[in-house]
Length: 149
Image (cartoon, rainbow, N blue to C red; front, side, top):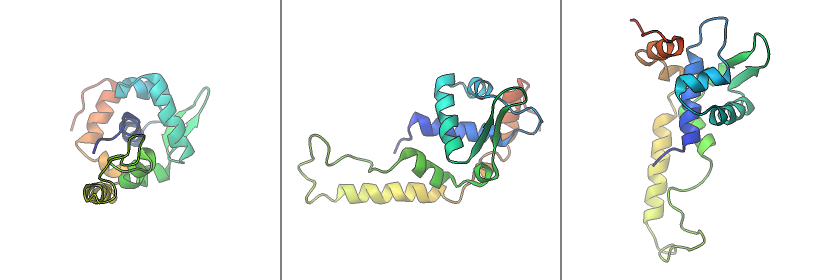
């Protein structure tokens, strides 16, 4: 299974925001630069995360992005399910339906594997993802200084 770029960027944005400790929250542009993603892509991700209640975005002087309590404790499995949307690993019914679809065992096996993948991510939270050594590294790259332990 492969995650979309959108989900990948969303997880990295959440991780970056989880290590914000100062009174100067980063802007979308700053987070995009730190995570090395295009600003326009990061802006779409931030809008979706804000809609989900995981991120607060304030405009203007003193504005920036902050992670909500829900964002910090969000299940990675639940978040990936939400961002990836419904669907199977393979498309059996598309514009050219698979000729095996009426008696195929592969689709069921792949669906079970997909659910096992999500289930393995369910107990992990955003806060868990930024435990050491990841958190100090994120702080270091965000400040432009090497991380220290």
